[in-house]
Image (tube, rainbow, N blue to C red; front, side, top):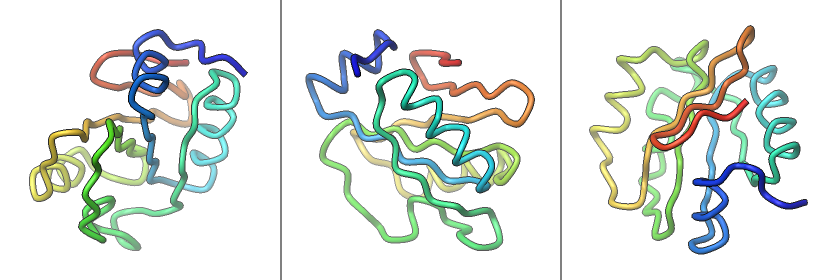
Length: 114
């Protein structure tokens, strides 16, 4: 399926963009559906501040390709999300937010996807 999100598609094709999601099971299902609809790849991890308090920084992965760490704001507070991003800054990693359940918007630094 072709990608339907200009900025993300450009990066996905040129740089193998990697989208990693952390949030509730319900939000994971919703973002997977959105990703299929938009032709994007996403890796979902069902988690919250209690079960995985450091999100993507837990395993100290080093991302060598452009990657968007997307957090479900119903599972992680803004304060926690910013803390996670600040303790593990990486050149190729940017932040995304997934607003659920009402809006189901994926917000990245360059696009709003619904």
